[in-house]
Image 1 (tube, one colour):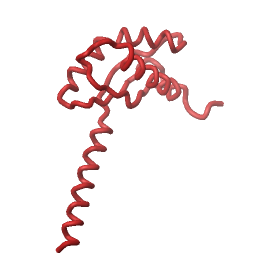
Image 2 (image 1 turned 120 degrees about the vertical axis):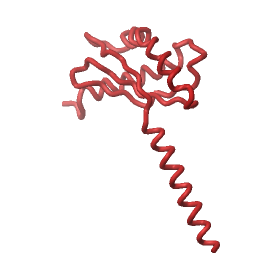
Image 3 (image 1 turned 90 degrees about the vertical axis):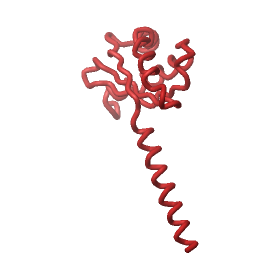
Image 4 (image 1 turned 45 degrees about the horizontal axis):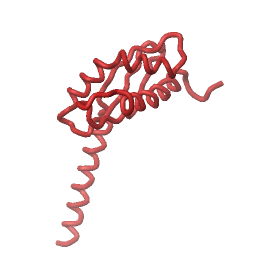
Length: 121
């Protein structure tokens, strides 16, 4: 018995392969710096959501449009690497966890700065 569900194992594999395809095989200079942060596959293995983070926040919409329009190419490349009867339909989504982490880091920096200001007084 495997230690975790098949959908999770496939999600991990899709994340790894999609990251390679997007960074190495997708030839679009408008894409910029994109990181694949995760992939979730539905329990019925019909849909896969690939989470990405984009270095330049102002380009999020453009990057999502490029990836969505390239999803058939990405899916065909995934099919070469992942042997499944039916490969899941691919969706792309911005990973809000990275944004949330930045916000927490900023708040912690503010608290640290306030504490260091109180020690001097």
